[in-house]
Image 1 (tube, rainbow, N blue to C red):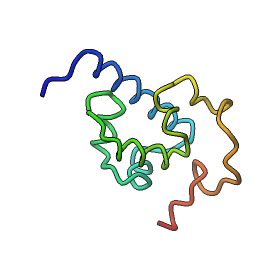
Image 2 (cartoon, one colour):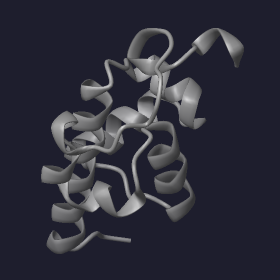
Image 3 (cartoon, rainbow, N blue to C red):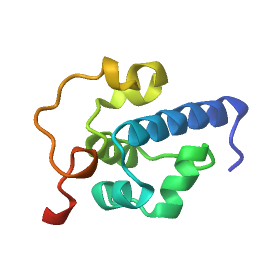
Image 4 (cartoon, rainbow, N blue to C red):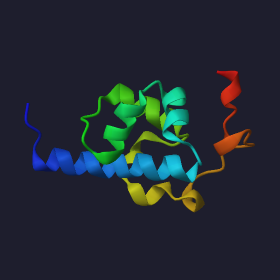
Length: 100
């Protein structure tokens, strides 16, 4: 199925939001992969806006990125200064990746 220009524009916007949030947390694609259950190639396609996303994938990513799902649709809300305090952080990017 061919994607419309509007669908591709949203995919790019959401992908940019995911990339910005991941980087603001100091997470690599590998770390986000472990936290979200998505593969690194899938995450790479998502961040570039070339992958159509399922709701379940978006939910997994928002949980892994410690942000509300609607924020992924609004890239300007993902700056570190505008995010709520999520409590004490452990490990790189606020995650203890050793406990998984």
